Every structure is written in structure tokens, then in C-alpha cells.
Amino acid sequence: MIRRDRTSPPSSRSRVPAGNSRKPVKGATRKAPAANVPRQPSAWLNRLIIIIAAGVVLVAGLQAYLALQAIPVQHIIVTGELEH
Image (cartoon, rainbow, N blue to C red; front, side):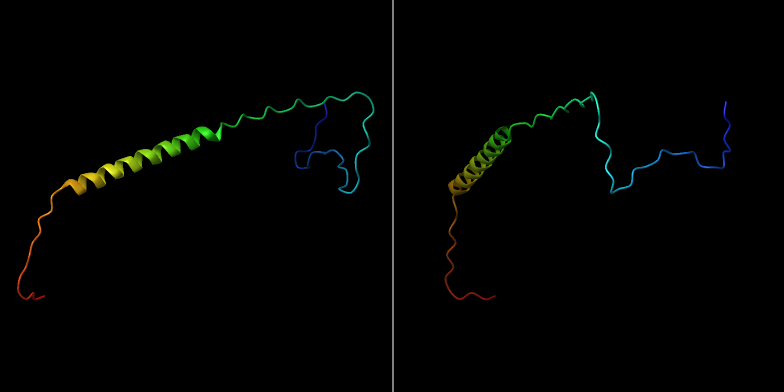
């Protein structure tokens, strides 16, 4: 068993300088399995939900407008001079 002085840093592998490339691999290599791409949900469903929601809001607004138009309004006629 080899004992190291705990104050000295552990030895590290020699690093390849940034400009140099590694030697080409000889022999068989393993290819990493392709990562599964997560399936993106269809945008049409979201668009359909937004269109339906906008339609519901428009219908509610139209019903409110028609309800306000159905309320009778009293006309007040003032004769004479008005003072502020």
C-alpha cells in the first residue's frame, strides 16, 4: 500500500494542450446510444383552446351588451337655465 503525503496535491493525468488533437482511434469503438428526443406536443391543441376561450369571452360580452341595451332608460328633460 502506497501512502501519500496528504498536503501534496494528487497526481493528475497529463492533459493534451488545446492546440493538439488526439490520435485517431484504431480498432472498434462504441457509439453512444442516441438520446431520445422528447416528443413536443402539438401546437394545434393549444391554438384550439385559445380560440374557443376567445369565442366564449366574445359571446359573454355580446350577451352583456344586449342585456344593457334591453334595460329601459328614463329620459329627463330639463327646461330653463342650468347652473354648474
